[in-house]
Image (cartoon, rainbow, N blue to C red; front, top):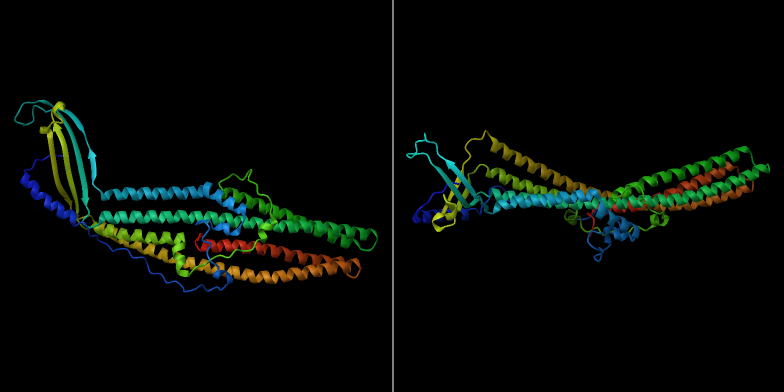
Length: 474
């Protein structure tokens, strides 16, 4: 930087002007952010006994899966939280956003640099310097200062936007965290429902084998024909096929769980536990609809994106105004290295620089229009996320209520179909009905029993969906 010495009176005349400029940097162009108004219903549309349950304040924040009281699920959720590559990637994106916010925040402060130089040069004889050619050394050791006087709030809006984007990234991380944990619980309960269904089908296979033996004995005695034997063999083969299909689906779910937990499918084992799918659906505290917007991380991320876009409007608007930068330098300069740090080698300079936009081919106007469009998009996305949040909660509540109603009906069907199968089998042994009646009755019973088990699993899965829709931990 060039160095210019000023008399003390000039310096004293300049300093008040600089102080005035800095003091004026308290204003900022562009709109100040206000959180968008979003109407929320006073109550949930779906009634249900789960609405009156109280939050479990003793549970650690965020560990919502512990309400199911399943140690295996607790272990899997902890593994996924610690080792899932998806969660780690989201965490890295959050850290990136934080670092970028810190970089942008640095513009709020003066920038200081030491730029030491050592130079040796020779002037050309033909230059009109008024003196003969000579060779000389130059040594400089300045402390250079640059500081943008944020008169229009451009730098503060940049910082405001960066902080909002960092907060949005934080919310995105928690949304990914919640999503992976919910996927673990969803997959786990689906797998446990298959365990319960497999136990049921395995018992049915054994029952079909015994029925086939009875039919074969009756056929050997001449009490039944080949048709009954063929029907019994068909029912046994069908049941065995169902067992193989359940095992296939269970393997796929087990592999999915392994990946969610950040592990290779090979070697990831999970013992069968049919009783886990029969656990009661826990009471889940809903809270008020207005509280949902504060609990869902995706809604929080969308709201922070609106704030960032709002700050971008201020940055774009500030581009129409002059940029004032304060430059300064203080240090040492000498032709002799030995005298570089002497008192007589001291020098300094201080003064403002101004950059005034005159003509840029409509760039600033286009930038402002772009910023407004980005804000409108962010606002629309936020409102959409709010609508989706309420829709997902209401749908999950409706599913749980309807599944509960189905459970009552299916339980009645299970009882009556079992009773019918028992009566038909007794009549068959007495020779009053054919084996076709037995197979029909037993098939109806097993269909209802499998439907009941599947419904229990659906209820647990739907409760997980509700927890996710509510934003997770409480």
